[in-house]
Amino acid sequence: MAKVKYYYDSETLSYRKIELRKRDKFRKSMVFLLASAMFGALLVFILYQFIESPKEKVLKRELENMKLHYELIEKKMEQTQMILADIQERDNNIYRVYFETNPIPDEQRKAGFGGVNRYKTLEGFDNSGMIINATKNLDILSKQLYVQSKSLDEIINLAKDKEKLLAAIPAIQPVSKQDLTRMASGFGWRKDPFTKARKMHKGMDFTSPKGTPIYATGSGKVIRADNRSSGYGKHIRIDHGFGYVTLYAHLSKYNVRKGQKVKRGDLIGYVGSTGRSQAPHLHYEVRYNKNPVNPINFYYGDLSPEEFQEMLNQASQEGQSLD
Image 1 (spheres, rainbow, N blue to C red):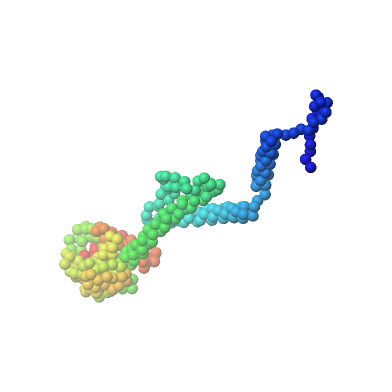
Image 2 (tube, rainbow, N blue to C red; image 1 turned 135 degrees about the horizontal axis):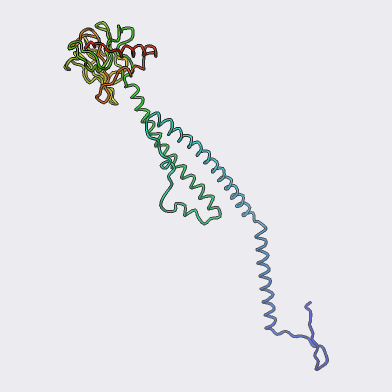
């Protein structure tokens, strides 16, 4: 039951009932409704701040799980970066040193990305900083992996060339030790057996009986097998590639022909005394980029240190060559 309000009328000396006008009733009703609405909105806001809905709880769990995964990804990227740094170190200081090629500078390995902001679309979110940082690290890692991949491709090609070089380079004696009578003359200035004048001897002379087998000292292609070169008589020339050519002179006969491919250790001919020669022997030369070099520097393939030292002593003695 609504309360009835009265007021004291001094003229009539009596209490009179307060009658509200319709406008006042409407105003009070509106104030009450507005206050109720505001209170309700405040209550909903407070509840929203402190009480989570089931959907919000699910989203919150997913967000926390996503943060955890990002942290794990960042740790894995850090570990991958450490492994990549180790590979880069070995690449520059082992592989490239071995294959005699220039290291890749750090500026090239760790170069950044220029131009426009690559991560603008990731800005404006609650966790933009975390996402942008992870994406940047992944981009840098991807670029470094690409550079390292191209470097390893180059190393593989260098290794293939190195393998070919090791097979091609002259590395053994052209006459086997058991067939060798002696090393008659070495590389350097020697007395010419015919003119007795000092003359540059561009190879080494191996004294052996006529018919002693002669072997290719490295893999390559026979570019000459004839007697059309002054003084050499019957001789063979093998192009090993990489600038190396070997020459075998004064042969009695051939076991190869021009254009034939040979491998190190293949029988290519026999000792003789053709051409400008005083006695059966093999005159052997090594040329690098068309310049004669001392063959004794290439006998690492089948000589012990003692045998090499003995040959070095014999080759260093100035005497008379056999051609």
